[in-house]
Amino acid sequence: MEPQTIVHVEEDSNSTPLLRNVNPADPMRNVTAESSSGPAADHATVVLIFSSLISVLGSYVFGTAVGFSSPAQSGIIDELGLSLAEYSLFGSILTIGAMLGAVMSGKIADSFGRRRAMGFSQMFCLVGWGAVSASKSAWLLDVGRFSTGYGIGILSYVVPVYIAEITPKNLRGAFTAVNQLMICCGVSVMYTIGNFMSWRLLAFIGTIPCLLQLLGLFFIPESPRWLAKLNRWKECETSLQRLRGDTADISQEAAEIKDYTESLRQLSETRLIDLFDVKYAHALLVGVGLMVLQQLGGVNAIAYYASAIFESSGFSSRTGTLAMVVIQVPMTLLGTLLMDKSGRIPLLMISATGTCLGCFLTGLSFLLQDLQIWKYSPILALIGVLVFTGSFSLGMGGIPWVIMSEIFPINVKGLAGSLVTVVNWLGSWVISYSFNFLTEWITSEGTFLIFSIASGLTLVFVAKLVPETKGRTLEEIQASMVLFNRKN
Image (cartoon, rainbow, N blue to C red; front, top):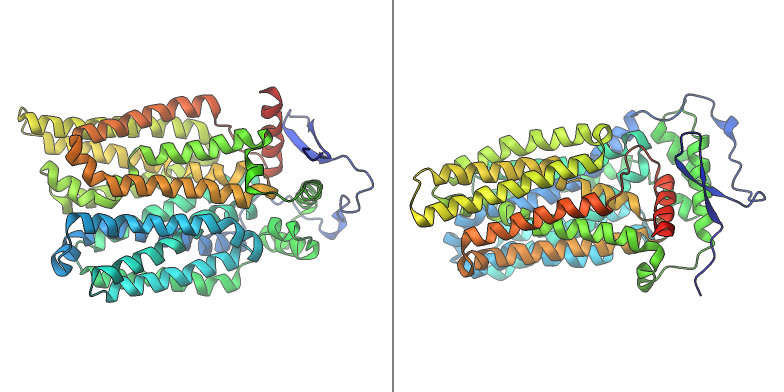
């Protein structure tokens, strides 16, 4: 039998759905507003900014791991004598480790807290980078890559969740999108410095942000929503006050968190099978669908093998990867700034349109090259990759992770987040491992045409199913999901 909930949806004066607890005798409902009488907590404080920066160092590590394989490819193959198939295994085994980390990420983050989960993951990243740097054979290279993958698999879930749980609603989109900005920065730094140094030194440099995050975690507060879930109300309020500032009035936000958390306590403990209950169907479809479409668009084919793509198109790999850096960082920053102004849906639509066009142009350049009817096809390949990179950085790179961190209720967030993250990494592995073979089996132009079609399908999916979460608290988003499920 489906457990009963004591939650219902009301409308405020602005017709925004709010979640309320209908039990008037609930002792946790009346949070002492007199404990703080300052202004509303809707601005960025020093503690909030610092906490977000420390957490997104994990995203930077994610980016360095993804960006490492492209500039290191020729050096590793030459020095260790790897075949193309062996290097494809090395490049893609990161995602196998990440899938394992993603499977465990929700449980680890829910059991030990968001901060400890980040620290735990960085230990594996450190070991992984050290093993890669010291590798003399393919097996140690793969073990190190797998270990780093396991670490970033956990980070890819816990970082956006932690940021979403500590930020006020009017800043949450931009702050969570910094996750993608730092991934982009990590990739860009590896692309840039990888052109000028050995792959071993490049791997050693990858340990630096791991150490910085491990140190910084000692100085940031735990997620107040995670503390509330464990019934640690006093620590929840203390953490929230630190994040919002000493003079901020946290009473309303604390009341919403406590109301919602207490309501969820009436539900039975969630199992994996429970995720497929109809009441979570919309959230699960959106979360999984966005991750699948993000990967089928070909991002990791371009990220992992950018140098090889440019070389096969006849364009300079060094110039091409540096051009990608010039494009992706500003576009990611632009997407971050627009996140809480334009909303999630418009950015996703523009981004998917651009990735569709970019893959089409790249595929067209390879077709023209094969037909030998236009000598400037390498330039078209560069334009296509840059259009794809800029468009992906604007929205499709970060927004699926933002939405994933927003749409699941706290009682299933760990399991659901793990499932969604596993799906993302599974898609990443499929694309990163099969790309080199696909270009041989169905040609490069055929491969990029498939990526272009997937981006076109993303437009339809976003328009029909993805909710706008801009400007809503996490509790309000859950209320709107309840309304959607009832209507459908």
